[in-house]
Image (cartoon, rainbow, N blue to C red):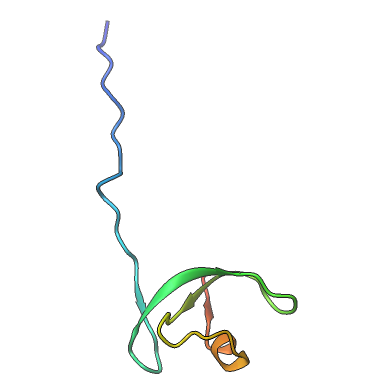
Length: 64
């Protein structure tokens, strides 16, 4: 009879996935956006530049 091993936990192995903004070259972070019109869901944004304006929302890249 085989002995049971404890499950492996991925708690300490968090990897922050970043993508670089094609315009400014700054790191982008995935965020969940909920909008009244347009596509809602997960998008890549530059947190330092994101202020909720229409220009900032247009620069958000959808995660595919």
